[in-house]
Length: 497
Image (tube, rainbow, N blue to C red):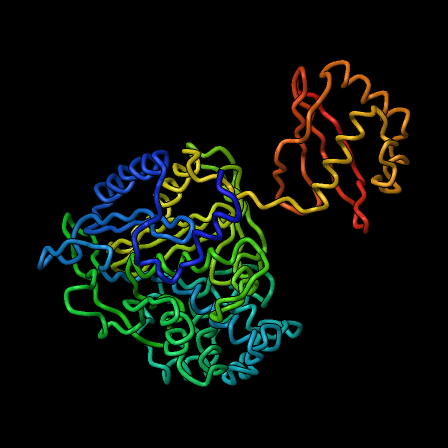
């Protein structure tokens, strides 16, 4: 079982990620090989010229594989250093930049966005009671602008001057701000303008200096002309039984919503750094962005929706939008987050599982290549392999004390054996006589019990304790009260014969 401490050791050298991957278990190696057919099938069925995919585990690029070609003219193969556009996955970098400026006191998320983007002052709102757009609205797609895929994709080359004129002239609303989630590339271009104005320099330069350079992402950027010769994955459309090259787009003002280019090696550094913000803990920060601020990207900012299960999926998936990323939760992957990217010539996706320290990503040079489905399928496969368990946090001293108190209660057959550990409501909710009668019946069924097994909990205040017994196991559900010293507000027993 992977512990929080071992995970911390593994992620201590995140910025040295280019080194060899950490030692892998046989189960992990088998799990990696098992996802290869998924991507091979995707590439064949979708006619993708090239694909690269990788898995980051505990701060290392644990597995990476490149398939196909990056350029049909040269037949140059895709490698882990091939530069792909990642399209809307760029939005996360814009959101991180906004968070950093917010932390520095240079950007206010809940003030009217026109305070940092003056052109917005001339907007004609749809109703007289519409609230003014905020930076938070822009970051969470709730500003009321119309969904603009695919129009927004074609705006990547728009100059800053033309973007200023577009905004100053006013744009129509789909609805009043704050009423619903509606995906807006234009809104994220405005978020990029907010970063530019708050930072006092273009968002591309700010993101490069604040994030890309410190993370060692030397092959990542927004300028197509800066990509070294022979390294670019040329974008293609599959049409009439052949690949047709798409025109190159950008750079420009809309790059904040989808203009970033990167490699598998570089992007793995970013995933490792971002996942290292979990779990919350003591210790020094890295100076790039506070861990607590990184974790905000996964906090839902807009209305939650349920994505219905598809064939082969066990449960529905809850989704919302955070900041430049989409938080999800379901019965297989648990809490996770990610984002897709699609442009003429490119399709990409990433999923990150912060409770497991795992990230899975894929880039393709196929127009709107729908890699999100295969990335999710691969991630589910990895989780179901059992080789990447949820990290176990060390139990809080309060839960350890509660375990000892429950052990004493059962051994004595009397809930009053540790009266001081009972919150004032516990015996009011169910009196001592009834609780003791239940314990007597459990002892008759299970016999004597030993000390609790290692505590597994996802919070410092609640857990289910397991005590091995002569004839089975005793499970004790504990919920602590918000008191000092520790007290139990709920204690429920269950026998496992």
